[in-house]
Amino acid sequence: MTTAEEFKAQGNAALQAGKLAEAIDLYTKAINTDGTKHVYYSNRSAAYLKKNDAVNALKDAESCIGLNPGFAKGYSRKGAALHALKRYNDSIAAYESGIEKFPGDQGLVNGLAQVKKDKDAPPRPAGGMPGMPGGNPFGAMFGPDLLAKIALDPNLRKYMNEPDFMEKIQLLQNDPNQLSNLLQDKRIMQVFQMILGGNGMKMDTPDEQDEAPAPAPTPAAPPAKKEEESKADEPMEEEEEDMTDWTPEEIKAKQDEKAAIEKKQTGNDLYKKKDFDGALKCYDEAIALNPKSMTFHSNKAAVYFTMKKWDECISMCDKAVEVGKANMAPYEDRAKALVRKGKAYHKKKDYEKAIESLKDAQLEVFDKATVRLLKNYELEKRKMDVLAYQDDDLAEEAKQRGNVHFRAKEFSKAVIEYEDAVKRAPKNATIRNNLAAALCKIMDFNGAKRQIEEAIALDPTYVKAWARKGDIEVVMKENHKAIDSYRKGLEIDPENATCKEGLRKVTAMVNMGSANMSEDERKERAEHAMADPEIQNILQDPVIRQVLQDFNDNPNAANTAMRDPGVRAKIEKLIASGILQTA
Image (cartoon, rainbow, N blue to C red):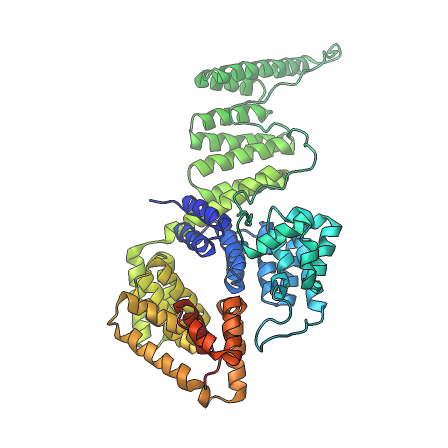
């Protein structure tokens, strides 16, 4: 069985090859296999944005942030998607939220600057055909989301620190006609190749190692060695002390302290030789000689950890902390014992207590390594909680309760039960289809569409889901998409009555609907269609633009072009969406 990481790796390869649809499909499979990894959503968001599908890019960016609020690139993804949607204020808020958490992130800073610039800039003059991008045919390439795309590309983002590069990019955005003059700059050529998606292009490298910080310009000093579970505390050298004025009790206490350290060193040597029983005996003797030192208890805990005796390790860590607090041991030593306790609980799969122990350690001494470990444990706990909640039998029971509520027209209650069933069986396409039906009843068509698309992703041959998707798209005035959905359902089951009837009705709506609409309704329908990335891509296709021009200037050439099935399908989409009006 293919793992989520394997799906992600295949998606990365597809994205680097410019196969955006394939990359999105593979990232979706990774998410369906393991939906707790924020990197999968981040990568898919990048792929959607490159495909000019900013709506889905935004959804994935928000999912990424929800899974890991401490991931800087999630905020860049969200800001870039909102920027592409021209939701400038929301985009600014997203970038500022990220900068608040990561003030030194260059991608966030540059993205914020660009969205503010585009927000305040005057609208560009339009030209050419109505409803088409005006002026220079390359003008749309250098739109408001260009800087965001550059910031997300590891091969290009380094240029954003170069003032002359930024000046040239701004010049291109203000006057695309300067492109031919600037292509001599290899950096601008690389940007142009990134936009075109041509041969030799370096695609945005997905977040293979999103957690790793950018390399520093100069080699950093080697980090201090962390305490390992296999290494006990080393004794400190001490100077000889003058004990002439000491009492016999003080002299004995000092001698016992030195003897305890010697016993501990012997225990350390035995531990390195894997003589664990001998090491434990020496540490016990050290404790008997000096019961006020928590170090010997911590050493015993390290031995138990290596022996995989988790309960004994936890108990000894508690004793070490107790002794440490009673005798004012350093906070760092107490924190180490609590971290070891957390690791032992983690080995026992007791994530709640492991997290609690690490949080207690942070109260003693704040440590970045412990913060990273804590985040990993919290992420693992969320993943395990999701898996633990899944149960096919309980999912079926919740679905049946939802069905009862649905038949009783208690749609809100039905939604609650279906949502619970989805959590218990996230890969059940039928339950998601039922949830979509209930969401339609409470007028949440966007939520219904998300669920039905998930159902289709789980089972692409589920005809009922294709039919419901078409019904939802009709309600959302996306007739061109509804036609595609019904046709895909009929490709699977040519005799499906629901898809047949749906296709007949939506075709009639397309043919007759415009005649019954007011001018304002036609305008609203066209504006709604223009927000669709698929329609935008069709309108930017130079072949389609020429065909549309030929309908006015050279009808014979237009009719000849319409014989091509691909061209005809795109023109029909424009008609179905309301962009083109038929006589």
